[in-house]
Amino acid sequence: LSAAGVPVVSGMALGVDSAAHAGALSAPGATVTVLAGGADVPYPASKRRLYRELLARGAVVSEMPPGFGAFRWCFPARNRLIAGLARISVVVEAAARSGSLITADFAAELGRPVAAVPGQVTSSLAVGSNELLQAGAALVTSSADVLDLLFSHGGGTALERTPVATAEPLEPHLRALLEAVEQGGGSLARLAATPEAARVALQDLTELELRGFIRREFGGRYVRTAREGEPYATSRES
Image 1 (cartoon, rainbow, N blue to C red):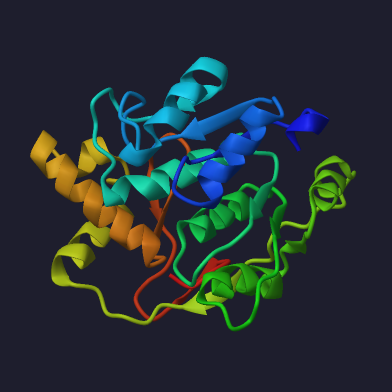
Image 2 (cartoon, helix red, strand yellow; image 1 turned 135 degrees about the vertical axis):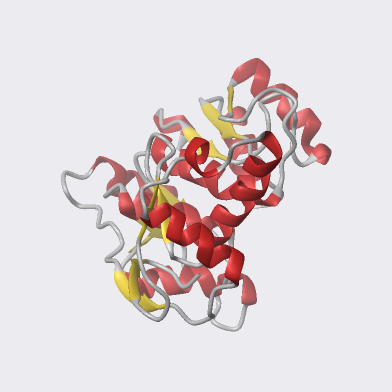
């Protein structure tokens, strides 16, 4: 892809993410990594060498302040940025609850093409990517397939969003936060008055987002997408 002049955007995680960056750098080509923590906090730490190469020859992006750690609840926000920066999202390998599926979901919301590489039906690491294909993602098996999808005029098909019912009842504190979002307090500044309250609220908002009750819009505002027991629009099961 890099040899064809296509920049690669990924998240520097172990496995496919890091391999994508390394491949782009060896082409050589342009590549961008989006970090869950601050731009000065390489994660995972084992990828410091790759991080230094990306600083020197690519780009490092983060919406978190310098020094901010890569907490679990930061990763969906990182995936949202990856989907927003890329014209097409390709899932090479994904387990049933892989973060790659969150990226694919954000890409589908943006109307961007989503593609996946088929995997063995007996592999747990291919469950998510195979489900994406069942949901309507484009099937790709080579860089040529990706280029065809990227440069085709209307040829790429974004995931068709199908309703999936929420299953687990909400805990009281999550239900209270969900009601606050519905009543118009959709920004973090409105939902939390102190830094500590903001940290807790971000964790709970991420939980609600992963379970399909809310979504985060550009600008940081949260909106409700479903009530308990109601269907909501998504391309994967939370």
